[in-house]
Image 1: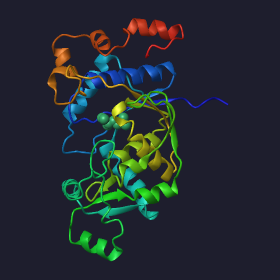
Image 2: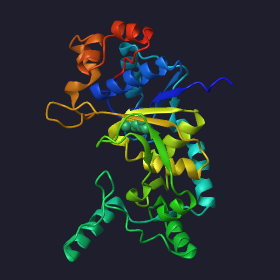
Image 3: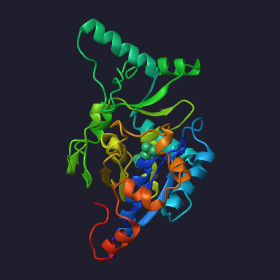
Image 4: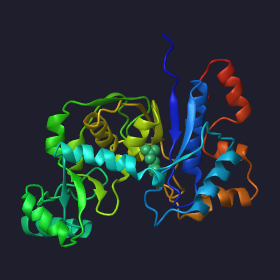
Length: 311
Ligand code: GLU
């Protein structure tokens, strides 16, 4: 039997310019795909149409071409596939795994602050540091939900996390990179830490978590290579894959490139954007060196001799 060809993807959001951190992620991803003789896909995660633009998309494609990163089929633009995410959301609704939640993020924050003031102990937070949704609307009656929705009250579709875990307990994934604290190998998923995550909104049938696993499934992605800042979110991704009957890819969470201040680079920090580095005259080889990857010629030589060029 011939083994399935590996499929890798780089999935930036076109809501700003790529920086050195993206360059590292794209180059590593691409090198791993080519070393595995696999396919390499580009996906544009543009569900937030208000913040994404075609100009950023063009800049991303141009920067990747400059780096020597090529992709094997036309990029998948998430904003063109809302029907796929709506179908997944519908499947979860059919299993009564999601519910409309009417508290806004601001109200959740205020709730947590009030709790902490009154009780003198911390309200639980998710791995990104945001207060966990208190779940006040989780057990509302159908009549009440319908009334509030028909009155036009804003809501988000949230996953009923406890129910979801009952349906898909004991999940794990294969990690070939590492968590921020160095865990690698078989990682036990801990989705409960995230509480009832948002999977859609009244005007958008998806969230990042849902779109990313639907696309990885539809595109047959076997290997997800991305930054360690998404390590903990993988627990939610594994759970959604299990609930929707999608296969689990292998994951490789790589270290983040930090700025001189030791913080994660941001899309608004112009000095490390690839566009400005290119404008300052840097070549692709310079960028590879800045992110700690071997030069192209060295990388090719290493891969010919069968050694890893990606560290
Ligand atoms: N679109 C996400 C980002 O730009 C990456 C998602 C992923 O690789 O899973 O951070």
